[in-house]
Amino acid sequence: MTNNNTKEIKTRAKEVFDYLNYFLNRSKMPENKFIIFAHYRSGSTLLADLLNCHPDIFCDGEIFIKFIHLDFKKVLFPALYLKSQAIKAKSNVYGCDFKLDQLIHICSRFFDSPEKFILKLYQSEWKIIYLQRRNILRQGLSICTANIRQHWHDVPEQPLERTKINISFEKLLQAINFSKKIAFKEIKLLQEIPHLKLVYEDDLLKSEQHQITLDRVFQYLDLPSTLVQTKLKRVSSDNLIDQIYNLDEIIKKIQQTEYAKFIDF
Image 1 (tube, rainbow, N blue to C red):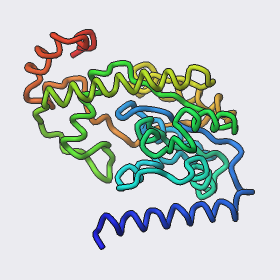
Image 2 (cartoon, helix red, strand yellow):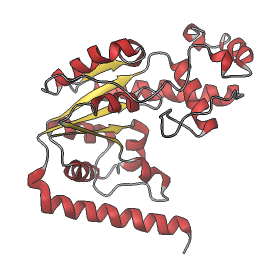
Image 3 (spheres, rainbow, N blue to C red):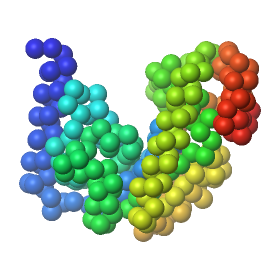
Image 4 (tube, helix red, strand yellow):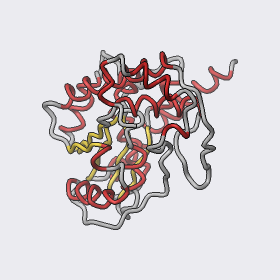
């Protein structure tokens, strides 16, 4: 049996166990539940870290990400699996992080499309926090940088080595185009569903904005305010010349595209 097969079996066994645990303990389901709906490198990990400053909140990570690395990516019952994770948290308020491309992979069209899945959550009184990043050029650069370094977050227990890198313009363009496509789908999916919208550049980029933003979120979740402070550091700085060897080349090529308007460095 290959390592991939072993991983698949273990993941599926744990999935079934989580379903059983839910049915045995569903009376313990938190009444207050939410999701963070955001694309990669939009600040969702930062938002979750700030939310976890609240004593009543447990904000999970990307609960579906492990499935997209399996041969059979589908989750048997996505909505039920989400509930099973909320039960395990043993918290008054439960939240987690969703990526639309993960939902596209794990949802079966025979049961729950991403659109139906999100709608069902809203109808089941899950609250939706939609986090968007306006500058998709910066987002694309951040995606490429993280993929090259294989390091997505700068935390004290695992500090980031800030070495300079070369970025492929073709891969950057792919990342930007994909982010643009996903943002369009996210907006379309949520246009009929009430939600709280946050924008990374306005609400999370500057640390002095964190408390103001989180007070809005706490109010949306019907929770009292609490002081927030993150342990995360920004992986990228405003001065990209210190991080990217071929930045001048990237800028010249971007200037010839529709994304030139996003150059702010």
